[in-house]
Image 1 (cartoon, rainbow, N blue to C red):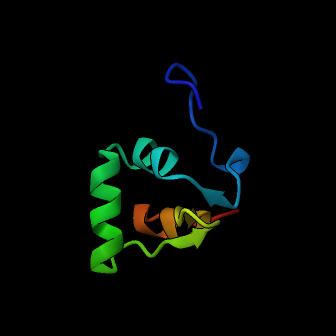
Image 2 (image 1 turned 90 degrees about the vertical axis):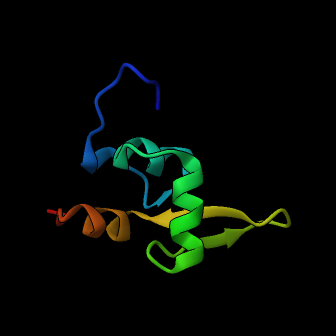
Amino acid sequence: MSDDKKISLKDLPDLLTVKEVAKILRVSPLTIKRWGKKGKLPAIRINSRGDRRYRKEVVLRLLGVSEE
C-alpha cells in the first residue's frame, strides 16, 4: 500500500502485515506488536521467521467496522 492511496476495505487481503495494520489504525508498527503481546490484536505467525499476519475481520472489529 503506498502512502498516497486511500485504503479500500473491500480490497484488503484477508491477512494483513504489521505495516498494513499500522497504517489502517494510524499507529506505529511497534504499537501493533505490543497489542499482539497483550492479546488485544492476536497475530498469526507464518514462515520460519515467525512473521506476523493479522486477520482482516479482527482489525475491522477493532475499528468498529463490519464487513459487507
